[in-house]
Length: 631
View (cartoon, rainbow, N blue to C red):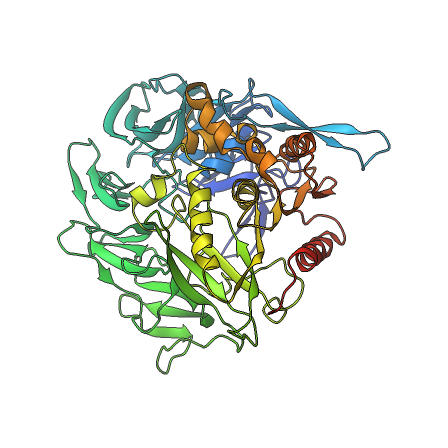
């Protein structure tokens, strides 16, 4: 994601603008922020940390060793992609020091992409990328003295290569820093207090999980690196799944006492705000329907059960941006049956102060033609899956119709939600319901639904197997519907959904007749280490699970119509996945269709005409091999 740019300071009295870092290359600054005393600004440029005096405009370089492989104050590709870490430095409360991450990626090998179209001679495009099984970057925490520009390195115990530090913050004072350390398998978490003066570390809180510890569960996958302090820095909020549900805890800084705040058999979805003055924490949850989201609040002392804050008349998905004191919020609401609406409200009463439907706070109906139905499918394995279904226009129950399944079915995302626009076949060029297709999507085990840790983590070491079986077993039930044409069953997905599509086509060819796999991970040993090792373990310990999970292992099972789409410039899921897949399909004399987009990335949207070409390709292939309409 693009994080570089130019920063300006606005003087509220004079209305004048002053540019920060104007002696540095244009649009090279990252994460500029003012010191707590407002006298200085710090930022990153060229992998080094700088500080600038606001009054004089004099800039001072604090680190000098930064390179493309030795990164100060921000992160490498895989930390950002898989941990959500971007902003890599923190001002001390007294404005005298800066704590920062240093990522040493000097031993990370480059994956070389090949550009053959931007020059008559091809050239390589190196991408720093630690494949699964390869050692990750080493990481350490330093404290910069602003006056001397000297760094004191913290003595964090453990091998710096075989551990990650995804979270760091000043511990409520200028003398201590708090960090979270994960082991390489991401099954052990340690919270440590670091002495900023001596570098000494003390472990104050530990946690372990037989599958993995999810550190991105606090803020809707936004930057997880910070901390939430209360009680003058003597306690902090912590999110854990250790009792089987994702809950908020209040933990003493020394780790000796913890209080469960969000009690009950439900998942806290995301932490929204802390109202310490009145003793509340606000968070999103949906105890009664995993497809929806509502704002709740609980007492910080855990004394009472969670209280619903969102309007009861609005059943669906809510989203909030709360003021720091949680007294006001920007509120958004939508559902499959209701178009998005936005208003500004007082909390906790939901009194509308701007926008919205002030008369009765009833939701606005969606435009005519919205037909999403939510379904539950229970497989022969006893697994109940949530799904959405959109029926064809002019449906005739005496006829049989084709089904198009949209899949993702991995820990990275869910596809079923009660929100406006969440359902549908977004790559179809035209009115797919009018063209006579049944559209369905299902979330099986392993997807990040708020159904408890057991649901999410049952997929451990079984990605590509368990999630594939869930999808296929649910599809079998759907094929029993009298109006479904068993000979016209299509499946498609992108990225992890592309991988799922391949595995379904190869492992269950008796069900799926047509598949469109976009940017798929065909060989799980080709993806990055943080993601794969979190969900699959270390390949040196269980490589056989990676092999079973990889679509290329099952390519010989293809019987139906397969279209594979991939950008050759994909720096996330490398094009080599598709080339390895091609080799397996060719070896087994399996005929298929291929569309390669030169130098397009994972999103396949660069270049004039690309998006229209893709949707046309998708639509034409589906119509040709899985034609719509009742028969």
